[in-house]
Image (cartoon, rainbow, N blue to C red; front, top):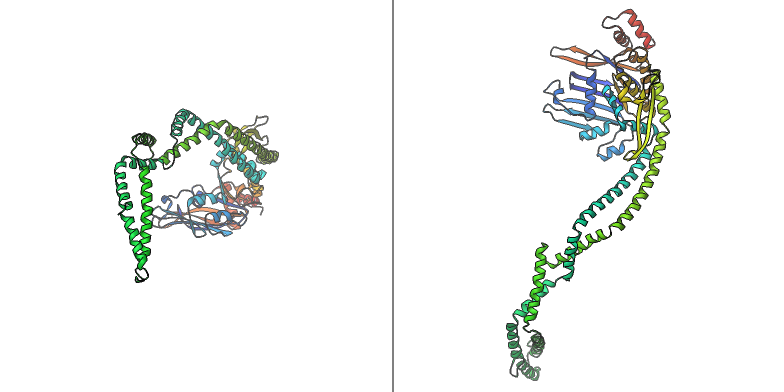
Length: 549
């Protein structure tokens, strides 16, 4: 509920502060007095675009602040999601600075305009004549049905199932697209795969081949070095023989050598190491042989590997192996396509059946309120002077959509024996206003609306019909806060509280203001609405009668 609205430096308003109550609040005033200014200011609170042109004093900032009682709206989670402090009495403030910048705050926490727009839909429904265009919207029709039928839980279950179903359908389409693309390339991929498979690639093979190639092409120099080393180590008067003789001599005198010399052990250790080296060199010498056939074989193999690496733009054999594995996977997708699609279609069919079951539950709950909706709206239309009006909910089963399988349209006939037709095609402006009021009245009983503001919805009606429209607004106000901007005395007299918007001149400019009327002021205001600027005794008496005084 909107409890208070403060507006400063906005349009023709210098400073005004409205304290609003529950029930039906009436706002009246002469044409041009500025009744729509409050709606413009509220629009800022609801996230509408800010314009520096609305500043009354271009040197000062504009501030619009609204206080709401949101204790019954279950909005704690929405506040938490935005890291905004929750308070059951929430204050929203919007500022427009002289430089054109705009700032928004909720409970003194800075917020972006998108949060205001999201939050605003739970707080205020501003109904002006242009909103009647919603009667042309299928989604609006379905939204009315869901609001009355209280389908929130069923719609959530359906939406989750629909999301799963669509994901599977999209997966099948993606699979077909991928398969078509892969099939076009399948022959070439097969050729590439076979070429790599025939190469019998091994990790690290290129490095091994290049190392072996280095040994083979340098075999003569290697063997010369090996032979020299073997001869130096193993001859009768060579290193090992000398070390052996040296060790024998140290054995004889080791008991007399200083302890730190350790000559015997160190000579023996050197002899063992060199003997092992000699054995290794002899073994290598036996293996190293110049083999031109093997060199040619290695050249052919490395040429093949380098050719494949260059062709496939990779830097090593491991890259070729990775490519071979990737090609194998893609070819497997092509080869396994039919089996994978068959399995996926089983999943889709199971998902479809689950979705259908949830859609049927949603459909049945929606259909269950068609009669109540029709009866309620027709009753209101009859009360508002449309005795022959008929209102029909047209329903058919359509394909699955994010909101269900139901195609719903509101049909209307104003005249006796008229064939109900799409409202937007047959209803006049006044008729559409009355139909929309009937819908909003219905929704108010289901507590599906926040505070509602009617902006001259009663345009084009008068007399008894106006009185009936006022009565409907009064009934709506039993369940919610209703604010009506009106030019009809029959509607104005229904309000619990009554504000008058007026203009007055200061030394500098003309400004608008809004005042809460006392009981006597209210009689005078309604009398003026009845008779014009010159208020007659008859108008005053009529005003008192309308007010039940």
